[in-house]
Image (cartoon, rainbow, N blue to C red; front, side, top):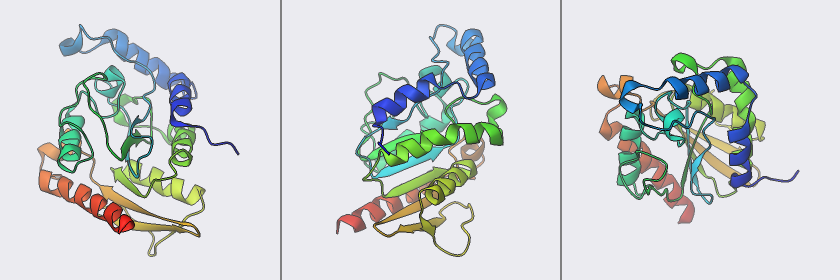
Length: 235
C-alpha cells in the first residue's frame, strides 16, 4: 500500500465531507462569527495537522474550537487552549515562539506535529462516536506518513482513546495492565521492529487550566518526559 505524504493528507482533510452535518456547522459558524472576530475571515473547513514532517513527537488533541481553529485554520491557534499549549512547547524547545494567533504568525514546530481526533469543530465540543470513526482514517494516514514518530502525547481522554485505537490498528502490542487515561499515564507500544510511547495529559482547555486541574508545572512535566524519551532513543 502506498503511503501518502503529509501534503496530500492535508488536501484530503480540507476536502473531507464524511460528516456533512459538521461541514454545515463549521460553515455556519464562519458566517455568523463571534462579535470579537466579526472582521476576521474564518477558515470554516476541516483543519489539517500542523508541524514538522519529520517529527518524532505527535500531539493528538480533541477537535478544533468553533472560534479558535475553525477560525484560524491551524490546530490550537487563536484560542485559550493554544495560549496554554504553545508556550509550553516553546519552553520545551518544540516551538519557535510562544504565541500562536493566526496561520501566518511565523510559528514553526521542531520535531513535533499537532493533530487531532477530529478535524471539524463539533457543536458543544462533543463529537459523536460516528463522527470520530469517520475522521479516524486521517489519523491513520498521518501515522503512516511519519516513520520517525516515537512519542505520542494525547491531550485529553478522546485523544488518548484515538491514539490507543491507532496503535492497535497498526499492530502494536500495548503494555499491561489495560491502559487507562490519567495525567502523566505512560504506555509502551511494541511491534517487532519498533517501540513507541504514548503519554497522556489533561487537555489544556480553559476549563482545566482556570480551575487548576492542569497547571503550568504539570504541563511542562509532560513535555520534559517526552523530551527525555526522545533523548534516550538517541543515546
